[in-house]
Image (tube, rainbow, N blue to C red; front, side, top):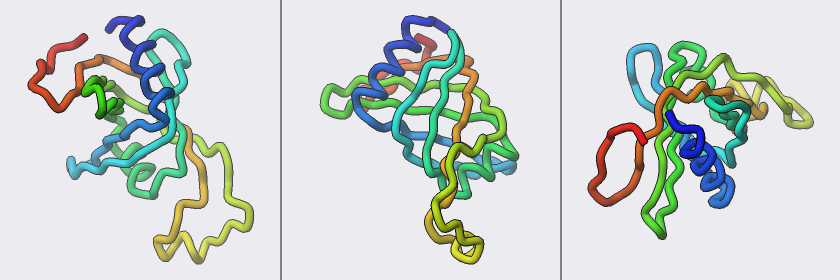
Length: 134
């Protein structure tokens, strides 16, 4: 994995203001969520924070494999960061936390932070492209 490519991916995510987070449960059922931006933590680790839905946090608790997709649709350029995450860490709780609402599947009430160790980076675009590591 190239540090320069990871830095470019983080810069693109922050310029766009969004990143897609793909997880799967223990049986492999996929789920995609959206988050705000990325933060470069170390040469091979990023952080992504969001008010993730319970499916995302449940999935990473059972299956640490994760893909982060950063895609500039207008210019059709992007990156897919593949790696593993540790258990999510809560960073904020909604004022007026309501366990009753959470049990009914209402809006997420906790902001979560995922630390992702990036193992490989591949190009992501609508146009034909290779899935070889950048």
